[in-house]
Length: 108
Image 1 (tube, rainbow, N blue to C red):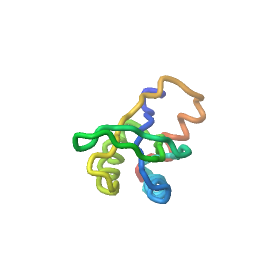
Image 2: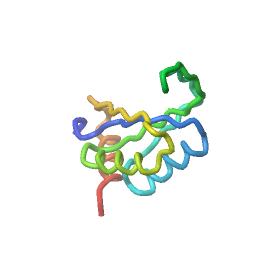
Image 3: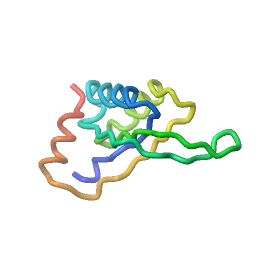
Image 4: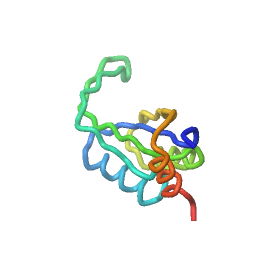
């Protein structure tokens, strides 16, 4: 069951945008739940120079089945030219929690 669950992450430089990206994914049943971390400081290369920004990390709890739809939705809604998009496999967890993720992302 754990192999069916992933955590997908992106960032936003705007707290309200982060909340909108979280709410929309849950409302659309693309993710069972979302965490938004407190502001973090990012340093990165962009257009041949080092940039820095305050960002909010957004972590989506979803299934491998729903991941392609979540990724497509995020790339449509996200304002960045190249939003961070990484996925982390879930190697274990409580059976009740993992079952909840699967149930809440099931397509009707």
